[in-house]
Image 1 (spheres, rainbow, N blue to C red):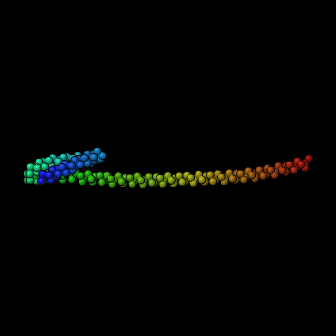
Image 2: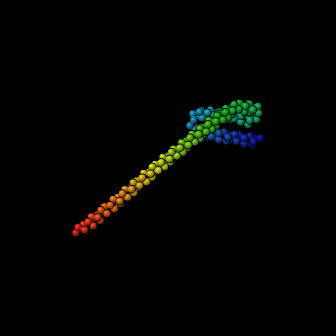
Image 3: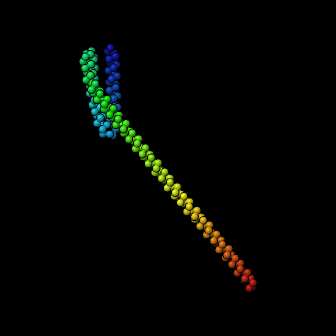
Length: 169
């Protein structure tokens, strides 16, 4: 029985150590004030439970079954408090995660709208430039045609002047 008792004591000690490490991790990374308060309460409840467990261990090691039973019952309130606080912390974190996910979805949707509007504005700007270039090309083509027509008239006039000059000579 002593071997079993020792193994149980070690397992519980390791569990308390892991729980204390997890609580310390929550305290370090969480930014919610409510979680900080509940984490301190959880730390206190775990410490109270561990102290009561130490008393229970001593009584159990001394084979005082009634004393160990009473001590276990006394530690139950600290365990229940720790459980309640842990559930409350979990609920707060779940709500924070849901809120963060909702905000991220809103930001993503806004970014998509802004990107779409930017693409639309860019496309309209490109269409405007294309229409301007097209109109400029047409204007230049019309001007080139008029210049060619004017040049043809000047050439014809020059020929007539040359013929008249030949007839006069």
